[in-house]
Figure (spheres, rainbow, N blue to C red):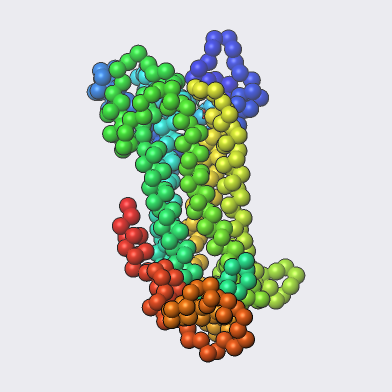
Length: 427
Ligand code: ARG
């Protein structure tokens, strides 16, 4: 633990200080180790292309790095406390395996751009995964919306009975929201899709690094240009990503809220598969929707991470060690979001609608607005029609609107084909 890649002669850091500085880094770096190896391979290819290392040296380094990748995946190489972080671990490994040649790997880079590039690759992969989950959720919701397109549901505002609605509308409302999330994730991926490698500690290096090559090798859309801005974008990008994830999780929270209400005996409008319910240690009668409640609660963890990150970022420009703590926020945010999103498609697929209760809850009063519109259709000004219906004792003489009269997107006219087409077109 006390030997560092940056060690100064005669100065050994104490275990206590070293472990304070590392914090949770070793644990967190396990999530980005593979990406660090990929970026290291791209980096040395870049070094070879400008003649800093020879072709034969490049081949040896790549072979060793691929072995390290494999050893890490099959757990024969363990990232432990004896390394300060994953970046040092790679260098130590290469020096141990290849001696003098291993010492060349850090030419033209710093751990500051090394961590940035690994985190960015990690973020891109995880955003893709979140996008996939949002799409699967939207797909199931649209399927459900279609199935229940004409099944009535009481529509609520203020949690008070408002207007007749349909389960189709309810399912499709979430479908469209998750479709929006996919667009947002795509634009965030586009926004962060830039290569920070080659900026070193924030001030470049006096070598004509082949940044174009590493950008291409690592599959980035563009090269991030200004070396100081690259450092300053650490945390800024993370913030955008967490805020993007928050949108999906806001939907999860609202959906869970609805579910917990509609599953209660008081509403009794929906059922889900028993696999998602738990019993009680004391009350033999209970079937509790704990999964739904944990889904609802998980948003608060994300909100906590966003706030932790935002507070952390009160920093001057350039690298500061504080930035190490941005890793935790991002890794934990992805973890909680993916766990939550991935449980939803099957859970939603298992939802059963209580049709008779849904119809029974739609009382005559809820039809008043439709009746106002039946009068409007006959040529009465809206306010007069409204007052007439509001003050009329007898509602039965007014005919209801025909479903084809509904505006696009309302219960009588869900336009599900438009949502389906949009989902299909999304990258
Ligand atoms: N673990 C460090 C981080 O995440 C790596 C970079 C260390 N750089 C430094 N100048 N001490 O920020």
